[in-house]
Each structure stands twice: as structure tokens, then as C-alpha cells.
Figure 1 (cartoon, rainbow, N blue to C red):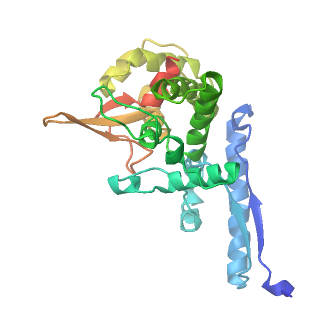
Figure 2 (cartoon, rainbow, N blue to C red; figure 1 turned 90 degrees about the vertical axis):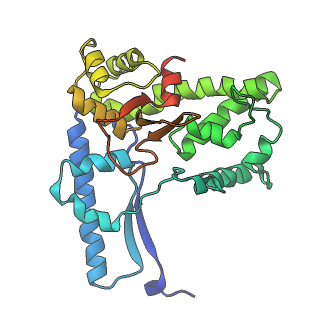
Figure 3 (cartoon, rainbow, N blue to C red; figure 1 turned 180 degrees about the vertical axis):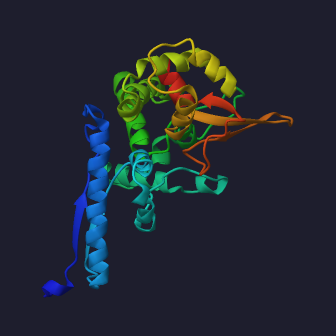
Length: 292
């Protein structure tokens, strides 16, 4: 039998972002989270000092919320040494070889179906081709429409399942119809929930995004369009950086080669901040959701 001193104890704080956008005073929410982090840090440090190695307190928080804390508390940098960032994004070309995100989805499928069917097995016979007639990998296709998060892929798959149930077919049009539903969910549910506490009124921002269009544009183009929209509660330059930080904006670089190549930098896949000298483009899934 395990003695009490050998047992491991973990206290976990989760779902701290539930109803995040419902707070009347979002600053009070941030200060409450900062206070929680300080208490947890103090207790965990006490455990270390007393060499209590079988007990720990863990706090789970969205990365965008965590990033907001650093601008409000100068001491938050000391938490970095004890932070574990879960990043599902596919960062490099080599990451497409059995990525962690795909492994996670396969685990979810196996748990739901109680067999060894994988994501790729489900879409083996789907004839998904691009405009040049080249067959596309369904997982890669879906990933480019998302923010590289498990819940994005799962939600997309749910809409595919709805389409299959309605039509009893699984082919190119099934994926495209599901994509429209997913993109609408991404903008109206996920993104609205994430940016609303900071911007409060998201509709003028969505109006601005529609005015900017699907093609790449410069920062000066953004400032010009910004002036034509009323009721945006954030200064223009700060808004551009904020939209990049939440994944809506991507930096774009056109490579002069044949065929022409487009290099995309985003907060999802790159560590750097918004580059105001580069062209900007709205995330493809976001653009489709705005016009769904």
C-alpha cells in the first residue's frame, strides 16, 4: 500500500475563461486572474523550498489571456520559467509527418468509435482537388482554414458529419459545404468570444475587415479603411497589432520567382510580432466566415 507521503496531489484550476466575454469590467477579471497566479506561484515556491515534491498546483489558461496579463503586471515574467505552452500548430514542413495535432484527433476518433480508424482512413476516398486538378490532403486542407487547434478540427469534422448525414455522400462538395458552416462558427462564435472582452463591440471591426477584402493590403491601406468605420474602440495602429496577435491578420511576403510564391507569417506559426512593413492578409477561414 502506498503511504500518504508517497501519494501525489495535484490541484487544478481549469475553465477560467468560461463566460470570459460576459464580464462588465474585464479589468477586474484580469486582476482576479493575476491574483490567482500570484497565490499559486507562492504556494508552489513554498513546496519547492520545503522539498515537497509530490504536490503541485496547476492553472490552465488560454494563451491570449495569459499574454494580456504581462501588460498589467510587471512581475508576471517570473512565471515564464514554470509555464508550459501547449502549441498544436504545424510550424515546419517536417511537422506534417504525423503531427501532434493529428495524433490528438486520432485519439479522439479512436475513443469515440472504439476501433483503430484514423482521420486519414475516414477520408481515403475523398476526391478533393485544387483549381489545377491536383489532389489535396484533406487534413492539410482543413488545417489551413483553422487556427491549428484541436477544437477547430473537431468542429470542422462535426459539420462534415452533418453533411454526410443529410446527403449520404462524402466527396469534394461535402467538405466545401462543411467549410462554410465551420467558417461561420469560427467568426461568430470563437473569434467574437475571444476579442469581445477587449473590443466590446465587434461588429464595426467585422465591417472594417470586409472593407479590406480578401487580397493583401498595406498598413496604410488599413489606416485609410479604418477612418471610414465608426465606433471602433481601439486606436488604428494598436488594432492592427491586436488583430495579428489573435490570428485574424497574417503578414504576407511575395517571393519574386516562377511560379510566384507567397510566404505567410502569423502568430499561429511564428514567434515574431506583427511586421508593419510587410503586406497584410486576413486569415482565409476568417474571411470566409465574414462572408458566410
